[in-house]
Length: 117
Image (cartoon, rainbow, N blue to C red):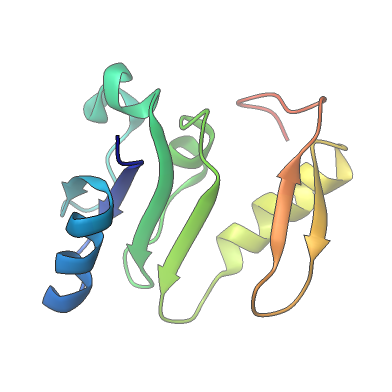
């Protein structure tokens, strides 16, 4: 079974082809990003990855509404929201940084709670 990935926005066709080959894709092209309720509990409960474009992004409600989210891939620059949420979660002891830099990696701790910062 392929991992479930939520895609927001219009990614390059070659990228979408590769994502479809490797993952089960749920694609939303709406603005603003859809809420977890619009996406549906059956999907949000399974999504492990989020791919978005920089001018689309993902808001706090969406990120916190994906309980199995492991990775966020943002095509472009401007990772301010992602950095802010991770910083808040780190201060609350809910995540810790395993690797820094371009290939940074963050893990949830046992204090992880949805909807809290």
